[in-house]
Length: 551
Image 1 (spheres, rainbow, N blue to C red):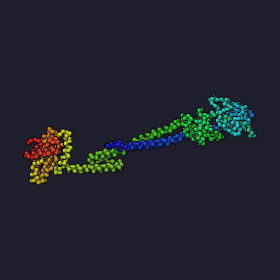
Image 2 (image 1 turned 30 degrees about the vertical axis):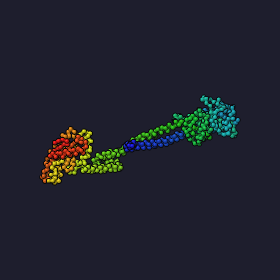
Image 3 (image 1 turned 45 degrees about the horizontal axis):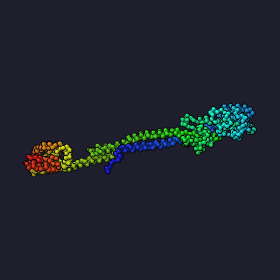
Image 4 (image 1 turned 90 degrees about the vertical axis):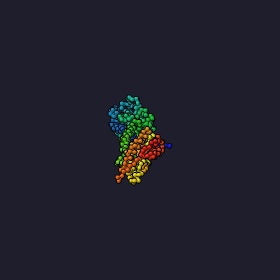
């Protein structure tokens, strides 16, 4: 099964490093953004919750302070002289109405005798009527007493009621005594519950209204005594565990309407002369509205995180590109090592010690490769070159023919083999010595090279035997070999001056055959050319014989 490279191996190192840095930066930035946004959101939720609890506390504190003021007003009333004498009911009534007009909170103020009959009151309401069985008289005759919210029983039909809603009071009562300390009656004050509604409404700032905040007041039994109409009189049993908290607190509760609210709770502990009635103030706000700042904070931090991640990714991309650029240059230089001619062609990277060492090592390697290439080239020259004449030898000829024949076949050319040796060379060797013979061969070699056409090859097969490989079309082969042979015959026949004033003159005999017309095997063609050479010698030497042609 073939080995296909994986997708990862096809990705460049530059892309991998940039991708890794970018991924890490984005992942770390988003993680830090998420952690920061989560922690900030939790803190913000806590702040929102405690603000809700603080709103509830402010409400119950304001109600307690207001009740304390009312209790103190009652104490002031007890010191008025008319209440002690009560000899003139009309004077007492006038004083009560004056107080009611000034304070605007009491709905009704009355004074009873010792038996509980009202002898003077604001507006003359209930004068002559007995309230002896009402808690305001029963409790008020004992000591200063504050009663919880209740519906008007005796005054419901007598007091004006423009809203049509049930009239409710908070009672304050205190015993009256004469100068001798003998109980003479009760001072009873009914505070309108509208006062508490006004306090509640004053707590709702425009911001709280925009946040859909609602304020409720619960009795000590957990019943709603102030709040939305649909909840007044209802018992909030589901909050039983939290409304008993002695300190302001908050929670997230699912209310009877099925919606979840951020719910702040604060219990009243009284204030000053007001002992407290166990009231519990509740501030509630829909979670969807209350935590809008939390969602906005999430979006802000995560959005900022994404922008920061993008910014750092771009920076990381640039930094990674700068880090990888030297490696890319080194890789490109490594690709060109085979064609490098000097070590200076490889840039010396100095961006870091590691890159400097790597580029230095590569430059040294290039220098070694160049030296090895030169050595190999020299060895190849020695292996393929005749040491005396510098011509190609038989080994090179074989290698050359292996590459030339396929090319000639593609181009529909003929390959001419022209074999020749020197006539009279043995006589020069015998008479003038081998050194003179060598000098003669060197001179003949120069004449051979000047005879060659571009693209032709000449090789020394040994001794005074040479071969030329010529390329031509089939139609021109005879003409080409005849032309080259004539020039060879003329140039080789010229005398050669040797050291010592000696002159030597040799001729040459040539035999030719060509591929593929004379044979499809180049070795066979070489044999045919050799046969033609011997025919040239037998016919008197210093001539050309082409295989298959008669002289």
